[in-house]
Image 1 (cartoon, rainbow, N blue to C red):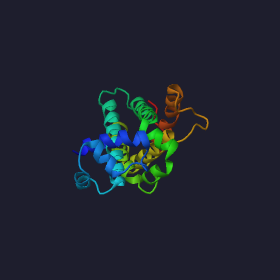
Image 2 (cartoon, rainbow, N blue to C red; image 1 turned 30 degrees about the vertical axis):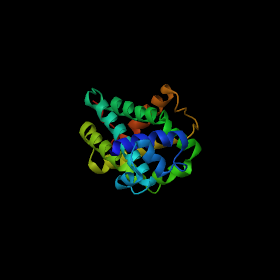
Image 3 (cartoon, helix red, strand yellow; image 1 turned 90 degrees about the horizontal axis):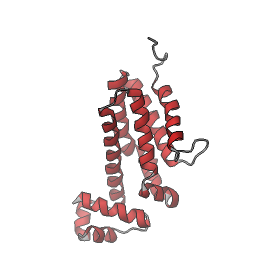
Length: 190
């Protein structure tokens, strides 16, 4: 039932925004009563948090899939971050909120960002440990830097890099990723 509610919420939020959407509308869109909706979600913010969490997990799953068959871990990391930016910059709901309701999105990306970022950081730490042999402390710092850089690339207007251009997006991460995951004294040469 929660998935049905979140599917309906995604469509409604994309069409009219978060702040103009009522719980009654969400219940009607999901084909359930308000009472039943409130059994699953305390309020609209709880729906938004759940929707962000579900969408974040889908993005994390796509990154994990990219790594499953990767022969070059560095190239896979660059591809993964480029893919995340692509998916999120093309997401109708996210782009609508960034453009028309940044105030509704802000709490989930500032004071509540840990809920969104922590799972992505943990997955990235695992990938850095497994594929690059990074110590947990270094992997955690690098992972947080990578996730913050990725979120900024999704949410910010172009300053010098056009993140809507696939080549520029990949070029940006091809430049940035090796510097963020390099061992403190650089990579060993063979």
